Image 1 (cartoon, rainbow, N blue to C red):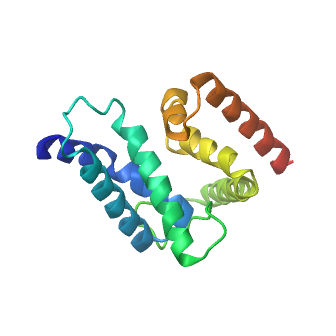
Image 2 (cartoon, helix red, strand yellow):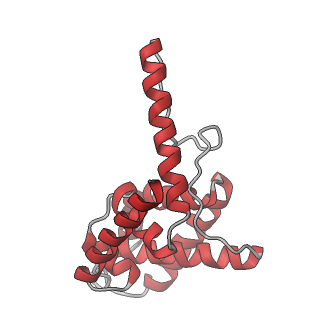
Length: 173
């Protein structure tokens, strides 16, 4: 892999890998550290390989990021890996809500409550279910890419996404 190819992959996937990690860590600093480690591992494992060696660099990066996150929590002695609460003041990439009228305030507050309810329910799900929901609905990955990340078949991944969504619906009710 050439430096130019690595640079292109880095530019294309940096923000989404950061967001993936930030959703779980709730810390920009920790997420940045893990992103750096992820891309370093990516370069180290692919620098001596031809450019066409890696079929799906995105899936490989997600897998490296998740493994690096697990390693981080092992070093920290924490038990939980999935954390969905997002603090807009802590992350410059988070969603900002612009308020213009009383109706907008009510609508935005209602949307915020709904998002918090969904995120709270996701935290209670089986970790694989939480991961696939985040990959599919928040990160926008398709089932083929998710299958490559979680090392399952595409059809099995679609079943997991469906079951995760059903579990989320039950958790919200």
